[in-house]
Each structure stands twice: as C-alpha cells, then as structure tokens.
Length: 83
Image 1 (cartoon, one colour):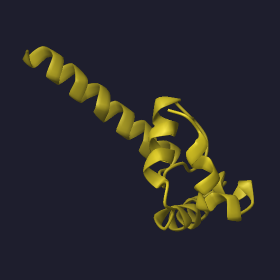
Image 2 (cartoon, rainbow, N blue to C red; image 1 turned 135 degrees about the vertical axis):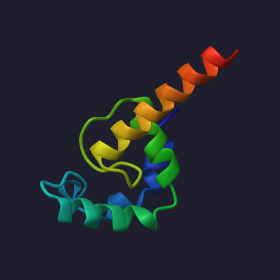
Image 3 (tube, rainbow, N blue to C red; image 1 turned 45 degrees about the vertical axis):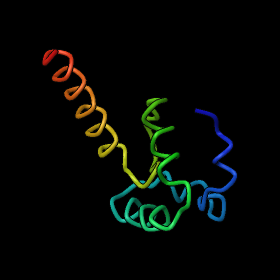
C-alpha cells in the first residue's frame, strides 16, 4: 500500500503530537479527529500492514491495533486449519 492517501488525512491540520498522546484523554482527542477523516480506513490498514507501534493511526490506539493484529492472526490460523 502506498502513502498517497496521507495527503488527504485530517491529521495534517493538527500538530503531530496530537496523534502521539501521553495519556488516555489524548487518545480520545485523536480518535475524535480520526472519526471524521476521509482516509481513516487506509490509515489503519497502513499502520497494521507496517506494524506501526506508536500513536493513533486509523482511529485506533496502539493497544487496539495490537488486538486487531492478534485477531487477524487467530482468524488466519483458524481458516488455515479448517481446510
């Protein structure tokens, strides 16, 4: 996946530190911005595909992205074993 979608990200209107918060309140602020972003899906996929560890990407915190990755791995294993 390329990064051309980044030019349309709502995050470009805010300081970068907004999306690298130090607390839960900061995560909520970033997620609210992401909620109205036209490229939120592409952003999340980029972060998941590239194992981005820090910050809010695609409206998801680091913890939420780790959870999504674990779930995807579990589903891949389940689907592979079901064949």
